[in-house]
Amino acid sequence: MNINTIILDFDGTMGDTQSLIVRTMQQTIQALGLPPQSPESCAAMIGRPLRETFTELIPMTEEMGDRCEQTYRQLFFQNNTPDAVPLFPHVRETLARLHQQGITLTIASSRSRETLDEFLQRMQLNQFVSLIVGADDVAQAKPHPEPVLKTLSHCGCKAENALVVGDTTFDILMGNAAHCPTCAVTYGNHSREQLLTAHPTFIIDDFAELIDIVLQ
Image (cartoon, rainbow, N blue to C red; front, side):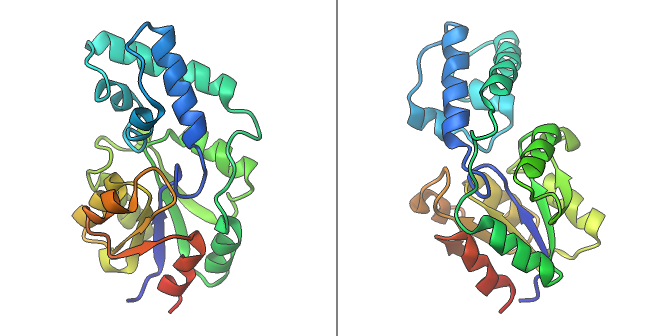
């Protein structure tokens, strides 16, 4: 397998954002007087576009869905302190090694490009990442293949030479639909059992294992 491009998810794959997202979701739900949801239920929605994390979790009107999105953004801005999101183990050194070896590193996320830019700068990872495709850059979000197809087109890369890496079934299904090899990480928001239902090409327990897959 000749991989020259990696298409990475961010939340749950590179950055450990689960506690920040879940806390902000629960605060949003409480602020708007919606039925309380467990941390597990909220975490299961991570990876979907922001509005859908609420509309798929709780039956609501279109108007309430818009209010959830607006309230979440306001609360997230307050909660997203400099120390709120740690990197998962071995992310920085693995990205540095892959970048040094000439691998093109990109991100395809359901998060907005603005917050992705902020995270990468804060974590000093922007030097390694050459392209970001955020939720506001596509018409159809994961698990639709559009984020991957847009990345492939921009990078001039063939599907078989790009590896899609993520922690949810949405990431793996997106990569599969674009006919790319895929790699699921087990330490994020979906369990190994959930990830296996999407049939990833590879499944790893540590981000550093990407080196063995890509540089073999």
